[in-house]
Image (tube, rainbow, N blue to C red; front, side):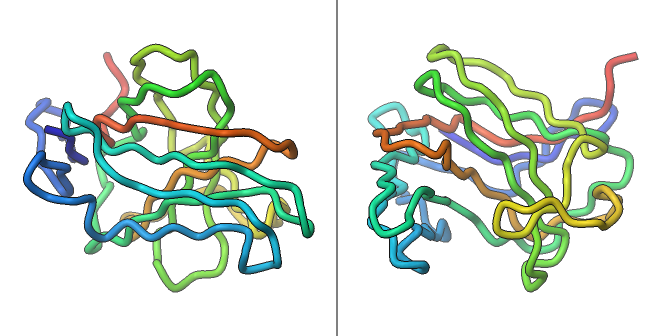
Length: 177
């Protein structure tokens, strides 16, 4: 089973999204560079172990270069938490984790992370998220909201490449004391 969960300071997980072998990855929206004329292709589906898999091909043709999988959430409170933990198996490529505190805002809060090709936990502190719009860093404060309403994974490394990242779960936790 693959899940997105919220974990409080007493380490009690709260599931806010789960992949399941009987359920398709409903709710995930793919946004490719075709919105700007590009030819990249991405998709979100599931593997035999019940993990979400975001895969495809990034193309630079027609000024393209990215693929994004994003999920709108009911408003999720983040008070008392300081980081997102991604349990993923990437392909050795660099990705972006993205979130929005309001799904209707134009900008996202972004942090790049490198995958190793092995299962790993990537910790992304809220204080490390940078406000970004269309690849440009904005002169806005760092993420400081009490809620999140959208999460996403984007690949856009300025080169043509196939990609595949397995997602076991997204969670939130606090710094270890």
